[in-house]
Length: 104
Image (cartoon, rainbow, N blue to C red; front, side, top):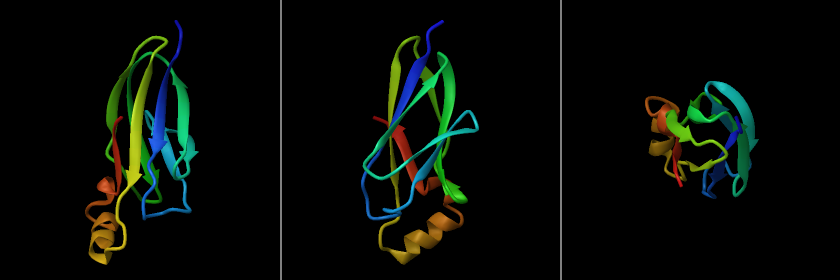
């Protein structure tokens, strides 16, 4: 059986511009992404859960179905910006919403 791929692009933003985002597939770290870059990961066909993280904050897990010899494209974006109240929220109760992960 031929592998498929998951491609994650990290959008540019105002938060964590000099930091990398960790990418996990099925709970295993598979790489890091800098702002404005992408990461392509080879995976077996089928369902996988993708999550992005930075320190104790991150995204919610996103389930994707990877076709045989096919690809799934995702986009991640670190939220926050310059608003201190939003940053406090994302570092505490909203820590699983600090990074947006969506199909793209």
